[in-house]
Amino acid sequence: MIKERCLPAGLNEEEVVRLDQQMEHRLPIKKGQLLFSQGQALSAIYAISTGSFKTRILHEDGRSQITGFQLSGEMMGLDAISEERYACDAIALEDSTVCKIDYDSLANLESEISRLQRSFNKTLSAEIVRDQTIMLLLGSMRAEERVAAFLVNLSQRFHDRQQSATELVLKMTREDIGSYLGLKIETVSRVLSRFAEEGLIAVQGRLIVITDINALLSLNSY
Amino acid sequence: MIKERCLPAGLNEEEVVRLDQQMEHRLPIKKGQLLFSQGQALSAIYAISTGSFKTRILHEDGRSQITGFQLSGEMMGLDAISEERYACDAIALEDSTVCKIDYDSLANLESEISRLQRSFNKTLSAEIVRDQTIMLLLGSMRAEERVAAFLVNLSQRFHDRQQSATELVLKMTREDIGSYLGLKIETVSRVLSRFAEEGLIAVQGRLIVITDINALLSLNSY
DNA sequence: CGATTGGTTGAGCCCATTCAACGAATGTGG
DNA sequence: CCACATTCGTTGAATGGGCTCAACCAATCG
Image 1 (tube, rainbow over the protein chains, first blue to last red):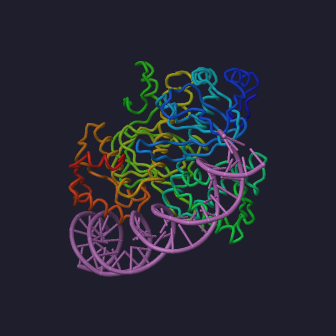
Image 2 (image 1 turned 180 degrees about the vertical axis):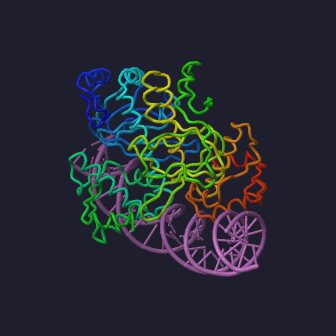
Image 3 (image 1 turned 90 degrees about the vertical axis):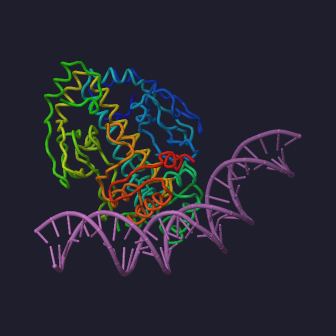
């Protein structure tokens, strides 16, 4: 059954069942596998059941940018609705499962259930807000602030999922983080080392233990 | 009457009239005036009839980021749907007029006209794509590339509006441009001067004449 | 008129990048 | 199983692109 987090519409039971019928459940995606790729025709949007993904846009000259990391319950493929082609690649960061939601069916169902349509508008709008937050980060923060913001954000989202907010097991590489934050891999590594030196975190590869969340928070809004 | 550019839904005449009735037309907004401000409760979304705007997000620490420049026909306030509060400030760059579209009415109308709802989904999705393009710019481009991309983008959008694609009359300050591109005002100024030296453009304050669009284009995808 | 805002240019500095070496972990094929 | 390659991550040294600080000019405005 679709998680409330996916499309928190406040639907009644019958409506949830009807929505549920439009979806393909627990489609398994292997680590490293492309769920969809940039330019592909829109067929469905996806909600993550378990696992995590990164989304990436490629430029003709070969440059790429990680535009987000998605955790369970979050949606992917919303950027495809505009041109009916996916605007990014979605790549599994670990073995994952997704709900595949046929877009035509969803749109049809939306016209019958106005609360669903309204809820979907909110989902789209939330993505805009999220992206603009990253724009602020990329446009005006220094390396330490970016990494601190990244850790704080991930901690919060882990917490929302009943996972530890202090012991973060990262599924992405340093390179992914760097691309997401607009930094080189060496800079990410150095900042993490500096945070560790200063006692804000402990780093053991992809396990990051936050030991002074307040210090990290104060690096954002000083 | 609402321009096709605002909500290109492929509606029939009767539907356009019904949509049109939900809107307040040609609301005049003076240069520098706030159309809506960050945190304010969502009441309406807006389409620009004439003129132009900038959208800006503010951080608690006082930092701000220009998240976009909007020209006639483009929508503002889409980021408010998520939390039912505007996520940014919208400020007129010149004396302008807007269509005010009551969001509740729009949502109700959407449930009756599925093509309208679908079209609105596309509008929201297009904003996501646009924002992610800026993320790429902010995350991986150097100063010259950013300014070139900005000029090329503006030239294209002017052309779409039957305005000159080579003689750009900017309505925004260098500071706005800098904030948008993640650069300091001095850097924007210097890059423009360098482009002028190299014969790519001519600069006279806010009038920019593009003399070698191909050179600007080649600065993006080299 | 002086005050303010907007824009340009120069000099020096600093933060993040580049270049480079190295280590650890993982996987692969003989 | 080991040898080897590959991927991932850390750290150091040097470089450089954009920032900071500063002076100056032009246009606008009360």
